[in-house]
Amino acid sequence: MKKKILIKNMVCNRCKSTIYTELKKAGFDIDSIELGQVILNAYTSDDDPIVESLLKHHGFEIIKDETDALIEHLKMSLIKKIESNEINNLSTFLSKHFNKSYSALSKLFSKKEGITIEKYLINLKIERVKELIQLGQLNFSEIAYALNYNNSSHLSRQFKTVTGMSMSSYRLLQNWDRKTLDQII
Image (cartoon, rainbow, N blue to C red; front, side):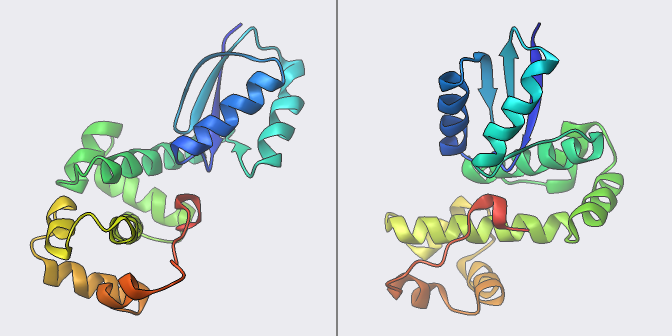
């Protein structure tokens, strides 16, 4: 029987690759895998402790609560939007994508995570900015444009507010101070 397993902290392609490799090594038949979830074929309840242990060993966990699943799905949707540089009207996107009012999603997110959706999105953007600075392929104006900022000044102010340093100072660092996406909250 197929089993859809929702997974917390599965936020990047490397996470997908790790989970895929470990599940294959353990002998599981994987139907599909994407950020935040895996679908396994021929799954029984006897497999639960094995999968749970395997995931926990790599810093992941199975999401069992419906609210937790919604929050994790919301986070994955925002991460995908940031990675694809498709950040437009946040409230409209989330309302349509989840078929719930933005107000309800926002209250639920804030209650569960202790941070607003907007602040979470800003933190995601700042981590993406750090990555783009580190890659060195775009100047600050191009980075601002790629992440839908009105101008590079707005991005610069936000970057300094979140990180405590200017983007120029960050670019000169020897040690990049980047957070993994699952550590943003």
